[in-house]
Amino acid sequence: MYHFKLTITNLKTTEIIAYKEKIDSTRLPQHIAIIMDGNGRWAKAQGKHRIFGHKNGVKAVREVTEGCAEIGVKYLTLYAFSTENWNRPKTEVSALMQLLFLTIGKEIKTLQKNNIRLNVIGHINDLPESNRKALQEVMEATKNNTRMTLTLALSYGSREEIAEAVRKMAADYKDGKISMQEITQETIGAHLYTHDMPDPELMIRTSGEHRISNFLLWQMAYTELYFTEKFWPEFERNDLFKAIYDFQHRERRFGMISEQLKEQETTND
Image (cartoon, rainbow, N blue to C red):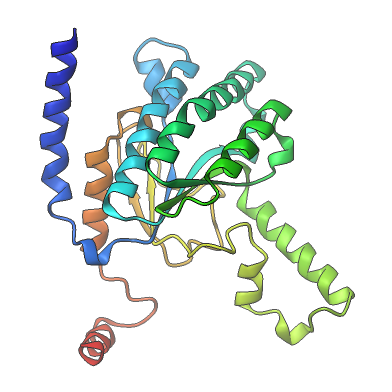
């Protein structure tokens, strides 16, 4: 059994090199966001319960997190549990919360070893107390880590995030802290959960679905979207590198035309 596992590892290493070596390390996206989709459908295809898929999805989280840290990505945000996910069957939600609790405890050594800081966005108070406590402990333990920030979007919904930002700005205006003219795009960004990180440059969604599902709506105004047919438990480090390689071969115009971008590049050179 030990020799079999070793063989598989060697094969995966060869696969990783295929795309990793093609990546331009000077043009990495600073921030990658991922919608981890397809756990339940993958489990169903195996003839298993949905929670089996969620358990196997943890391996993909580890692969992607370590892969991002390995090549120098500074921010990784994973859509782990949306506000809408509370509407799923209670047995699945309960199992997910238990899995989250167990995973956080096991992964703290990995985070520390890789110098990764854990961050959480969303309505954390909606989570069970044991989960909140475990998250707070890991965030406190990793707060000084500097290699990469891993953000879990838990009980998160982007529309509610924006509504909350509007309420905060309205309160500031009422208290005379800001004027109407001071409410700008930058002001709105400063009131979002992600105020201390750059907007994502690349968003990856697994399982073949082509939508963003109430995830970072404001922040993804100019994000490059990458969709793969693979279910999340099948997503490996080489798949991450392939998505980054694809990202690096896109022309990001931000409303301009190609000629303008070339002029900018010439000026910068």
